[in-house]
Image (cartoon, rainbow, N blue to C red; front, side, top):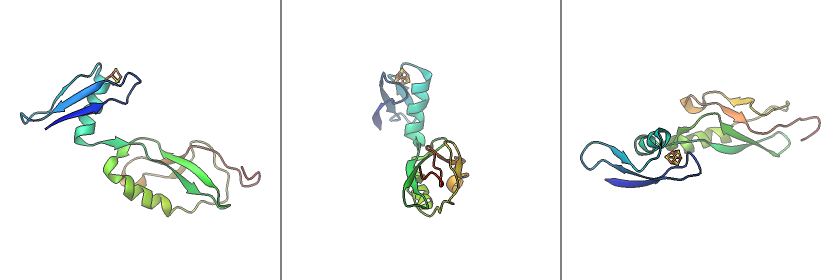
Length: 121
Ligand code: SF4
């Protein structure tokens, strides 16, 4: 099967082709090795950074993300786990770990914003 992939690693957006019709994966159209690796991963095990929010004790939402990409196939499982998180009314800073090794992916869910329960922001 041949597949066209737009590389999202840099703004150049190369159109890469992945072809495994011969039984061997052949990647073409990339301008650098980062793009080749991206296309190989997209075909074999696509990865994504999970970006979402967790409800704070005051009802507002704290933006969070994984600190590294996780398998795309695990996004819904991780979202369900995120929905179960109950945050404590403590201060959160950017980069604080909210959930370590979420769903066994090896990625930590971290805060991408800050919140202070005293100031309420
Ligand atoms: S292949 Fe390389 S140059 Fe092209 S978009 Fe991807 S990272 Fe950028």
